[in-house]
Image 1: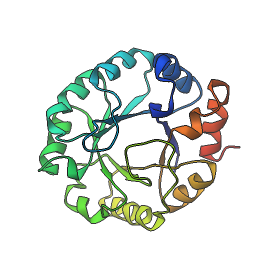
Image 2 (image 1 turned 90 degrees about the vertical axis):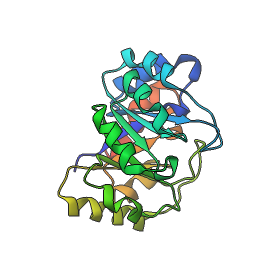
Image 3 (image 1 turned 120 degrees about the vertical axis):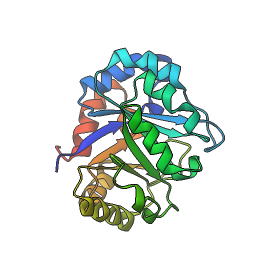
Image 4 (image 1 turned 30 degrees about the vertical axis):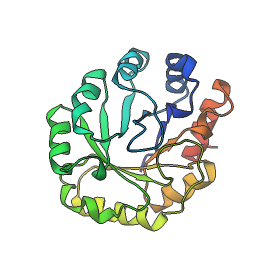
Length: 218
């Protein structure tokens, strides 16, 4: 199973986001993880569709857009038009998850569902036929730099649910991922790792080595 790395630009230098996206692309990132927060669904405010659109010319890599906003349905088209490739939503962010995923697919994008630490995997059992990515939060969403919550049993449960579908569905982990926790979540079945502070903390010269260490290449 190939491991893909999706650095979260939440930890990048916001004064030079275009340069940062180009740098992590050149350093070997597979996806560009974009955390969208509204100060309502989660206790922080980050960026909107205009910033995603502005960043789009800076990389041809997959834009992995995680919407931590509610109500989410109103903004799906805006983020699709801005250049998102994967749009990930939370079950709690709207009244009808199935309809939300239908909308994402109708917009021609891959659909993801994110599970907060207390949200059970069983909540998405009846939408697995529509899902392209399952994101398990190993911190409470809203801020970067938090400590990893060891939900390895949940990761294994999600991997088993994915295997039962026979479909090619990414299992992504976000929260407290570093070279040590990466090994554990990969062993539990994850194949996409989101890392913010671990990748960005030492500046552009370290991006490639940080990404390689998350893959277990060094």
